[in-house]
Length: 394
Image 1 (tube, rainbow, N blue to C red):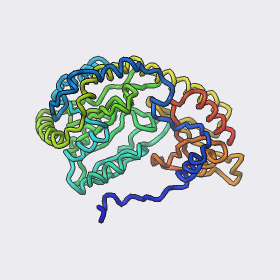
Image 2 (cartoon, one colour; image 1 turned 90 degrees about the horizontal axis):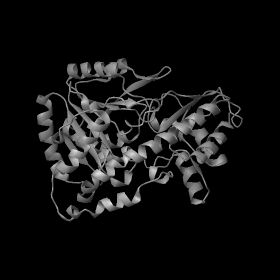
Image 3 (cartoon, one colour; image 1 turned 90 degrees about the vertical axis):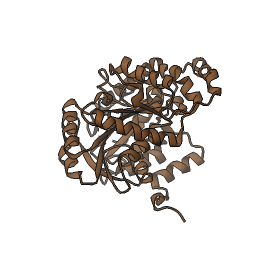
Image 4 (cartoon, rainbow, N blue to C red; image 1 turned 180 degrees about the vertical axis):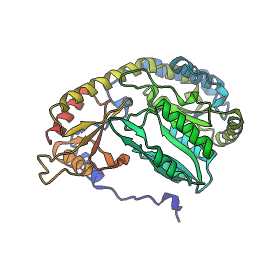
């Protein structure tokens, strides 16, 4: 009765079982996976946000496949003001989420059975998105040596005649690594040689740890580039469901891409009129929310670094940006004297015995099972107590 594309494993894994049992029992948890900024004690200008939805234009239905011109101009203004990149509003498509923007991109570029090249480690959502669009993912590696970098040998070896695009996350989630300028040069050359496009997720672009944000891929004019972002991270407003897709590159590729995407978007017309009318105010919230998020991230990161100095068997992997930290451990723990437990076993132990929640690294396809991922936007008191409980096991 059901399509093969929905033949996902539906049984709960041991980590989920443990988490569900504790939540069902009402057990208070220290959640160091918190990624919903609206529940992390940040200050929102609720008056301005709610007032933005009193716009009379929300009562008029004006279906525009790309989104209203006024809303797209606001997105273009963001790129100009924050990233010194000039974008034609006609090259922008508004969507309800980056997930929808990915779906548009996959439909544009790939036939059923075609392949997209995916970095690993990376966010697990891609497997589901690709499956729903009937395309296949071929992994390539991000390698680590005092910092993350693209393993170009694995990337090139993953290319086949059915390859259509290279996926990038800039900065990557959860590694927090930007694509370096020299890597972009090589990526463009590879794409030209094999007639590939770039699909680039930049939702965490505005959250560098120690410097200004890196250059956006929306400025890439060498090859067809589809850049995704949205309010979920930029303005810490995931509930508003506003994202976008920017199309750049050679005119000979951009023009037909825009024409085809307009038909795809016109088929769905998904983004609501109230959201588009409110976009100027919602996008402006980044000016007050971004400093709060960066301050929290830097405070939690500093505390984590200071605590790890007395725990040499736990390493904080170098990252440049984003909302997450990755820990790699190597030694026996006091509760697992026989040897280092897998990241899932350790995460379950921490959950059941200390009521603290971390993500095991295998959720993100790290190459070995000795990684934990934690959110740096967690409220500081919860973060500090959770880190203390974690490190007490080493």
